[in-house]
Length: 243
Ligand code: FES
Image 1: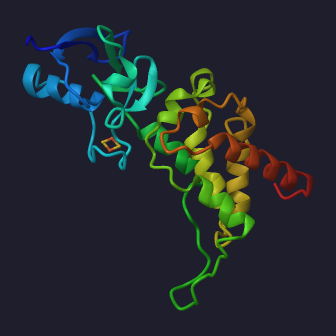
Image 2 (image 1 turned 90 degrees about the horizontal axis):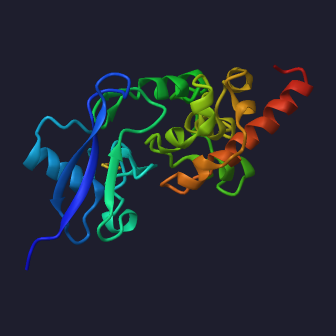
C-alpha cells in the first residue's frame, strides 16, 4: 500500500518584509499525528535548520504555540486530523503579534515585559517568622483567583487578540489575567500600584471584549472575565479617589 503524504507549508526565515516566506514540504501522514510531530519530522528528516520551540510535548510548558491554519494553537496538543481534511494542506506559521526570531520561533520578551508592566508578581507583606496565611477556598476572592491561575504563558491569547494587533502597547489578555489573579490575592500588598498599572491607556479599558482570548485559551481560562473584573475594580478605586 502506498504511503499517504501530507502537504505542509511552513513559514521560513524572518518577518514577511524581510526574507520570510512559506516553503512547501511533504511528510508521511500518520495516525494520531500532532502538528508538533510534523514540524519535528521536517527538522529531523528534511531540513535541520528549521527553528521552533517546544519542551514538554504534553501541554504543560506552553512553549510550542504556533499559528496552525490561521489560528493560534499548541502544536503538541493539536492533531493534524482535527485541522486538515484528507487531501488538505497544513499551514504552520509563527504566532501573530510577536516579532519573528527565525522560522517558527518568536521573541517572547515583549509579551513577558507586559506581565511586569501589569505588576504581575506577588508582593507579600509577611516574613518567615509570621504564621502562614489562611485563605478559605470558598471565599469569593480565592475562587476568582483560582479561575485564572492555571495560565502557563503560552501566548495563544495574546496572538489571538485583535486589540494587541491594533494597539501594540496594549498589555494583552495574559498579563491582565495575571493581574486579576493578584488583585484577588488577599495576601498581596501591592494592590494600589497594580490597579494604577492596569488603569492606563494600555490597560484593561482598552479591551473591546471580543473574547478571542477566552475562545482560544487551550487551558479553558477566561481572560475576558478577569479583564471585566479589573475594569470594575479600577472604576471603584477611582470613584473612591484611591488611584
Ligand atoms: Fe509544552 Fe506543547 S511542548 S505545551
